[in-house]
Image 1 (tube, rainbow, N blue to C red):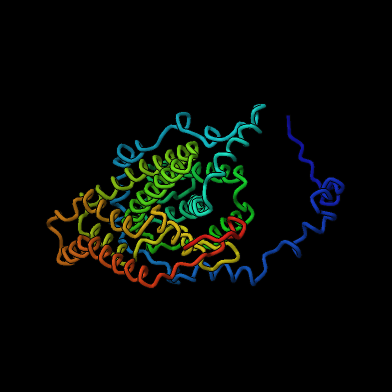
Image 2 (cartoon, rainbow, N blue to C red):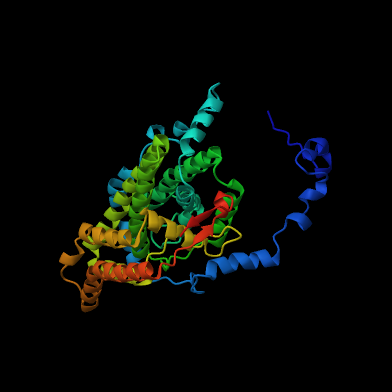
Length: 396
């Protein structure tokens, strides 16, 4: 039986029902009231550029034979990377940890949730919101992975192992933002409108982590970031438990477990690259560390505070959720995981890169100790309002 499509003009909208939402006329839907302005477009561009994120030129830093190398590793990836995914039917879903709206006890469950979170301080919510916003910018991360030469999803549904991993990894990660978003919404402790604006600004701003479409750079970065998010979510779980919200601790813990599993996949990829192409891999590691590993959400903006990411980061540092020490520890962990110090047969340039990255954790720690001592002496901490928590102030 053929389907008949009924075209409804805007004039046939049920205006009385729309009036209850403050919409009095079809003119509410017209471009003159909803189109983004030139000024707002310029704001998004400035967000992308404000931390020097954009080179202004697209570069491809690997030659064709390296692209062929990654294509030749498709079979290896199927056997060694895809095994780190979990079947959808055996995976947890956000609703497993949230009040059940289909049950009569839903309102009691929400009331119980709100009682649990009532003991959490504002500074904890700043951290949890920042973590959630970072997770919600997933469209940007998947887009970036699909710029990498030799591994990107060429059609949007390519059947190769690299493309399959990118899509399935994104699908698993997608649950993290969904779960934290819903939990925060039900908590009643945060300003969801401001949070939603921050997410929209962040995705609109995009991100240029300086991969140069180079999968060596991309997989080194993701190895670092997955371990960083594992640490961050693990520490938010610890703090939630300390403040009496065992359910939230469970939520953050299971997200951390996902990040740890994804870390295992990405570090395995880089380990393989060190095996088959040690010189170019150590040069890529050297290059990424000289550029510095920027956090995925460093272009965060809420429409009010141009420095909200710095303020959020200061709170995570003060509470020990993610610190400069963790940055050095992650690098040291990865260097050990990949046996970088023991690499042999490198070119002269490769050996110089090896020396640089192996010394870097100690150098980072020395600089951080000096910075902490200077900050302590200056005692420059201030209270900063966060729109995410209705403008209440938190020490940064």
